[in-house]
Length: 371
Ligand SMILES: NC(=O)c1ccc[n+]([C@@H]2O[C@H](COP(=O)([O-])OP(=O)(O)OC[C@H]3O[C@@H](n4cnc5c(N)ncnc54)[C@H](OP(=O)(O)O)[C@@H]3O)[C@@H](O)[C@H]2O)c1
Image (cartoon, rainbow, N blue to C red):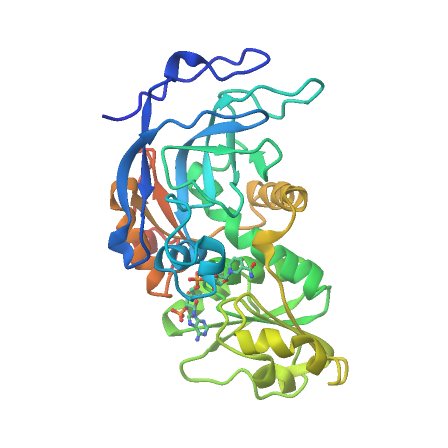
């Protein structure tokens, strides 16, 4: 049986009505680490929003790299967060777009940011739970109203890439007009956002990708591209002020020569050995610096500010989030398989609302979304 999902009324102090008690929803769940097939849809009680919380009827959600690491329990470091022997939480997914469906009671004097029926998108927090028909998020979570010009697929797709890339480009690389920036993994969710953010900051951007994705990376605004399957990108001394490895395939040691004096190397996915030597070694090298950043763990307030900013820039057409494909909720295992390949272009979106058009990568490519 599927949940009725009848919208509640927006009555004070709580817009969460009792008429859905006992209702159920479908959620993508797993109870052991393993391949994509450990994930399946199951009925779960409709979650009730607690004080200050929102319940969102999810239209679109995302399966990202952190989700597949959480599902597989690999790399092992992921288990420090997801649970050492078995997963602590059964539903993955941090990114969502949908409609506010119920609002928990507010504390006296607390202001309500949303009303029932508002279109919203955002990040649940690292605990996840968005790969479901309904998700409950705290009232101060990075959640913003979805402008009319942004559809639910795009709204869900923009969250991880830009919220990850923006702190790297702005705060770690301090990318400014005239800087030369190299983005490794420029066709992925994070890399494609980084290319656009660095261009927006006025940098000259070089994107690294494989042959079939070079046109896509140019289309994002990169001034030049490097096909890593046939060319090197680490051999021109002093070439870049900021090297951003969005997919964790390089190292500071390898890229150091390509950094200009005072340049910064940053990676989203450092090897443990890199973490160990990061501070002590890097300061000695003509001011060149290596950095890693865990943007998923930034305070919700900082993410909220960033989400507002990037949403406005997506709404006005400055940024175009990449969507690899849109997979029906019933096929969420396919989404995990696709992300596992390490070859996706932008976000793999899961259409929880069956009215959303689903596309394969080939259809998306034909439509000009990803060449
Ligand atoms: N530090 C943080 O706070 C944080 C936050 C979010 C995500 N992350 C991490 O960020 C990483 C990137 O996530 P994502 O979603 O952007 O990844 P993604 O979309 O899965 O990246 C896939 C892209 O990487 C490219 N790629 C694979 N191997 C490559 C190589 N050797 N050289 C250049 N490009 C290569 C692929 O292009 P080709 O097919 O052309 O190779 C593909 O387009 C993940 O490891 C994720 O866990 C970190």
